Length: 577
Image (cartoon, rainbow, N blue to C red; front, side, top):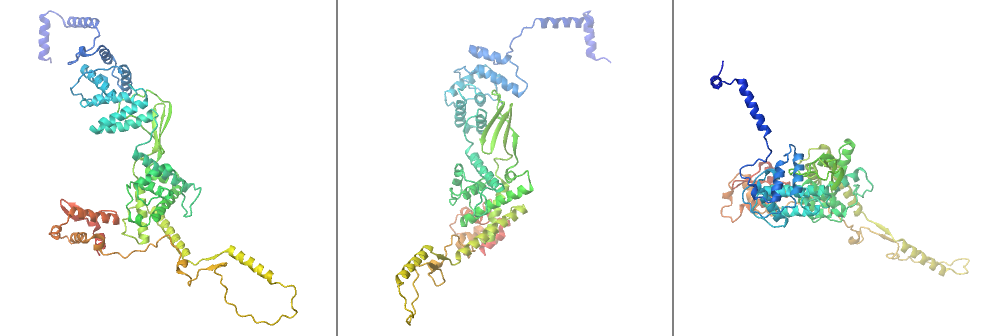
């Protein structure tokens, strides 16, 4: 069955007395004539007025249009690098005010006015002029050129220019700031520029390096302290860690340095534990010894997993990509290259393939380490009867047992030291004893006579008074001696629970009124009617007190009304008891 259009076409063909075969031949001949007469010429698009371009710019523009765009990212990046080398010396002064937005912009995306606008902007930026209004995509094209070393005298010059762009324009566009921070790091790695990691990352690297040394000293001990723990020699390069923590941390003491490293890698910004304020030496020794004992336990049970890897992931080489999110051509093509980024991170390149040798989570705060330190604090409070008990957050039972054994050994050693210090001591002065012997020999020689009577005369020797030997050879500390000489000096206070003061003394009457009102589910507004008290400030003071005691806040706001967190009702009641 034929369609109406077919009948109409057939009638038209018959009217011209031309067969279908002859008509197809005529059309084929016309196509051949068109192809033979084809002449290559650049296509033009609306708004492309090439007359506004300078001769060098027009030549570059035509070359860009004639080059293949590239089907793969590496091909497009290589093409961009080649075009950037041709455009590097061009300058212009053209006012472009139209918008231009492109993701991953290149020269092929620019029409003639936009090309002149970009070259003019780049000319001003090279002079370090602060331009206020321009398309952000133009700036990205210029950054791509700098990343590939186009238009700079040296890698150091390019790095300074990128830093200036970050400081000048980064604050106006957060994504640009983020990209520049990443690309500046990659720029130093790619061009082998000296420098250090960012401030936070450098501190984290220092802390993690100390933790590695602490674990290595436990597994392969060289020297041990009197306490039984193994502390490697302290590196003075890591002293900056103590500036972030408690003033009781002595930067000349290795124990304080390693304890600060554990705190930093656990995510603690400051050490606020009341137990640390009460007895920092106990908390430091217990934390460091427990860490090393657990490291030895893991070494014995898991051959391929260390304590550091348990907290921060496996240490190995991970694939990475430099200048991610940018158009970048690897023009240096390094065959075998290594860059030390930090003490825990190295970058390597082997025939264009980049890898990062570090831990799986080198920048993440360790939750396992935070739980370990919190458990040490909790058991120290429990075993010494100090302060309010903390919640049990450590799930690893074997770690808990190790921590408990460590604290018990420390407390037993302290008790033995205190008992030894309380015992009376007898000191023998050997020099004084020698002097007495010499004096006795001289007196004996002076009393010797040449003739002795055959029968000694009877004589009565009176009972001599006891000799004063206070300057002599034996000094004994007895209960009858001077108490100031007999009392041994103790360097450590005995940790006994103090008699808790009244709640009003610790918290204040207003805070106690607020807590009792919340415990009774009464109206806070009615309880403080007529009182000139700032309720938010009072709630903050109560929360700060309980945060030091139990490690959490107990009051939260439901709109403008404070409510008590039900999980801590018993703790609040025990404090008010």
